[in-house]
Image (cartoon, rainbow, N blue to C red; front, top):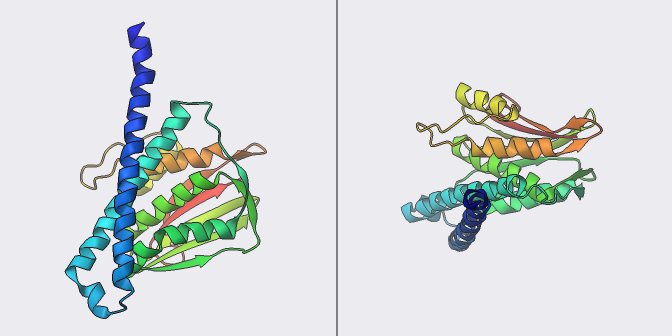
Length: 241
């Protein structure tokens, strides 16, 4: 009997620990954003060339990356450890969702000299879980920051009764290993830990699970990775029914 109860208690302990870590990381991230915003307000080319400024920008990128991972772990725990946890789908104005994502990433993108392009139908409304979808898009953008040269594009459109949300960059594109990992995630498989890239595959798995949770009239959501697109680099696609 002791073993039967130990697993739920362990899940709860780990989830509580992850939540505390996420809160601490959020404080660090918020502090870095404030410091970077204050420096940028000086509007000087010397600021962006300052090694300390560049180091803070890199620290902010890493803290956001870590915070993404912790959020993904918590979301997956709520689905696995608490199957009854509500999946909150509500009609959302797509334009407001895009604005929230851009607002979250604005300081980091600016501090790294990366332009953000957006393209979306301003009046389009779609039924989705806002928090989970924002988490997926934020992860895709933070991943694109790592590979882009200087531009990221977030676009939304309706196609054949599906909502398509794309995050593209003008980098060198995804490696074949990443393309394969994207397919494996949609098949419900983990690509495992890649020690050469420090990738656990958690982000892709999380994104695929969020996509598949969205169902409508017998259709489910999906993700896909490809190369090319309008910017010629990597393209992350989230499709929701």
